[in-house]
Length: 336
Image (tube, rainbow, N blue to C red; front, top):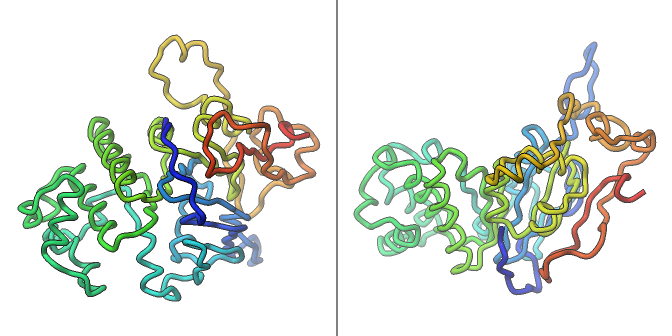
């Protein structure tokens, strides 16, 4: 896991405050109800820091990211970059504000236009913003470990790892402060994953980039993240330094996630107590009262149905990381 410590900044690159995203859906007998995809999420990412965002499919991670980018309109709450509050939708943001956040996608092939050369793919955002030079594209290619000659090829002529490097180079073209990385290595072989992770860490050290890193593979999240936020049914249920969350998880849902992660050491794997969750994710349009996790929690009590728990710190953190808040979890069993 990450042990380096970015310098404490005056302003976070990304601040999300009480963000909610709701969608109207059709209920039984033509009735209408509201699906709460994101339900009061707050988080922050500092310069030079990586925040890993984890949770099951359907927990709201993608909707949260789309709201941060301005592709979904928040129902309430705020998104700020560098302390400046952004308009809700992408087309309401100024060009300079859009350039400060860029996205790296899961599938590097489908995110690149197969008809264009790699040079033109990377050049496109530079041309739109009046910043294009051939030297700028060459510098971006070299920054991600490719050569200028490779710029004359098309995406189909590259391996998956090379295509992801192209996607990263394009994302860096407008000198963003924040990269949102959505499962950026899940489609790659393990050895190639390590190369791309090393590249991202090198770029972060060189450019001071902030990363919001979304992934299902907890071993990858543990390797690259300074902090981790665990999401369940539209809420953050635990957050803190990666060392704390991985070695001392507090929320029962986090404990279940960690117990399901593969362990390389067979002795540790044999001695580890597995937490098995029963049932499926609840319906986001009809969430349980109180704690949304209580219907699957092996430790749930009657009080869990009465109160929506808030994020609270269980104690001092185990890592000297001055730019982050304390290790927090949202569970009545941890904070009775």
